[in-house]
Amino acid sequence: MIMAPPLKSDGPPAPLELLEPQSLNTPLVFSSPHSGSHYPDAFIADSRLDVDSLRKSEDCYVDELFASVPELGAPLLRALYPRAFLDVNREPYELDPTMFADALPKHANTTSTRVAAGLGTIARIVATRREIYRRKLTYSEAEHRINEVYKPYHAALRGLIQRSVERFGLCLLIDCHSMPSTGLPLSTGLRTSEIDIVLGDRTGLSCSALLTDTVESFLTGQGYKVIRNNPYAGGYTTQHYGDPANGIHALQIEINRSIYMDEVTLRRAPSFPQLKSDIQGLVAHIATFAGQSWSELKYQRQSAE
Image (cartoon, rainbow, N blue to C red; front, side):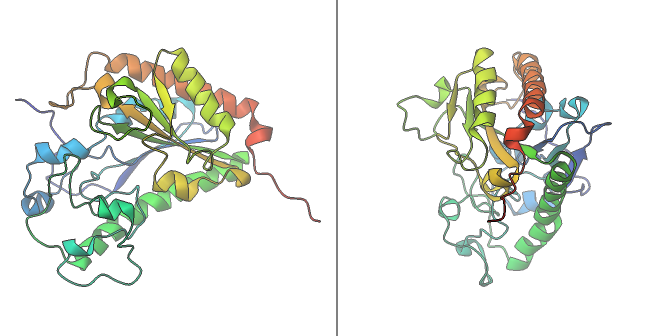
C-alpha cells in the first residue's frame, strides 16, 4: 500500500511557519496546530511505530485547505512538527508521569482527562491507540520540546492576536482541525461518518454566538452537515484565548477527513479542490461578517460606576 510521504527528516525545521498577507485588512487569525509532518529521526528511532502509523494522528492537509487565507488578508500560523511529537493544542505541561524515567516538576498537570487518555502535551499513544515509545523519556527531553516547539508557537499566536486587537479592536481566531470518520463518541445518535464538520465554541464561552451562527449557516448552505460542540467543544487554544468580552473570539473547526482524503493511504481525494474552494468562500464570508458586525464583536469596555 502506498502512503503519502511526510516531510523529509534530514534537518530540523523551525517549529512553525507563519504565512502573512501582503496587506492585513481583516481581524481574522487562522491556526493549524496539528497539520505538521516533520518527524525527527531521533523520534522515529525511539518509536515502536513506523512513520505511516504515526501519521494517523496528523490533521493531514488542513493547512493546505486553508492556504488561501493570506490572499484574503489574514495570517495563517501552522505547526511544522506533528502532534505525535508534541501537541501545541494542550497546556504546556500536560504530562503523563508513567512515560518518564525521572520525576516531573510540581507544575506539571498529570491528572487531566487528556493525560489519562494518553494524549497529553507529549502523547503516549497515536490516534489508533497504539503506544508510541519503546523506552521511557526523561523530563529534560520533554522540556526541550516544550521550549523549542510549544513556546515559540504560542508566542507567535499571542502576537497575532494582540496585533489584531490593537489594529482592529477585536480578533476572530479560527483554529483549524480534522477528525477521523469513525470511532468518535457522539451523544446525538449520529455516526461520525454522518457529520462533515463540527464547530467548537466551548458551548458558547469562547466566541460570540454570532460568529458560530454565521459559520454554520454558510457551511450548511454549501451542503455540509454541521453540528456544534459534539464530540469537540474546543481544545486548549479556544479555551485559553477565547475571551469574547474583550473582543477575542475563538472558534474551532473540525473537518471530517473522509470528505477530502483517503484515511488509509493519506492521499487527497478528488473532492479536495472543491472543499478547498468552499473554505476559501467561508474565509471571505467570515471577513465580511467581521466588518459588518464590528460593533457587536469588539472589546466592550465597562463604564465606571
